[in-house]
Amino acid sequence: MPSIKQTLSFLILGQTGGKNRVQIIDLLKERAYNTNQLAEKLHLNYRTIKHHIDVLLEHNIITTVGNETDSSTYGNVFFLSPEMEENIEFYNVVVRKLADIADSPHFFQNIVEQINDGIIIIDNGGISLYWNRRAEILLGYERDDVLGTPIKIFEDEKKFQKMVGNVINKREITNSKITNYIATCNTKSGDTLDVDITITDFKNDQGKINGLCLLLKGIT
Image (cartoon, rainbow, N blue to C red):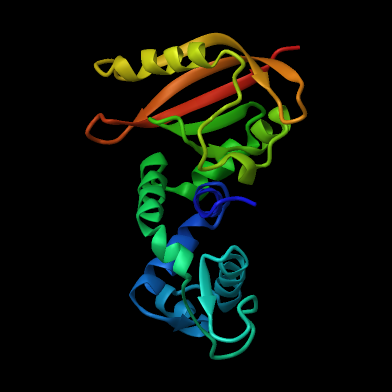
């Protein structure tokens, strides 16, 4: 079963609708709301809010009085679950990552989901923040298997860490990048896959590196 940190990464960074879920959670941090009140506050369709409420309930991010897995009862109010309250600092980190990755998360996700190469985004500590669908297919992992956890897919872990360090340490270069890095990956099924990797950093407006993008091409 995924940890709440993996779940938060998946629901906010790994799926479309992450921005709306952040807005809902931010409101519920302040006070309890019902579905209709949330729709009015966020100027969103009632059904859209209901869908996100159902998802957040299912993953124990929020809770309610009475039937805790159903948002259909009119007037039910929702608030953060105790487990979510305990992990609010990690949630704030995920929200900052969402803002850093792109000004328009929906646009970003639409683009990367249509690319034929695997895309994995990690933070400076090697924690997986995002996998596109192609990365899942290449390596056999579901996103909720890996998001929010250290990336552990490379047979030669030390060489990968060295490549990452080479990118991060070239802070004076506008776009630090390593291309044509060939590595062997361990898939979920236990097989190995040789991939051609491009590692690129992404920076904020102040030039600080927020994380790295790994572009993976399977070698046949």
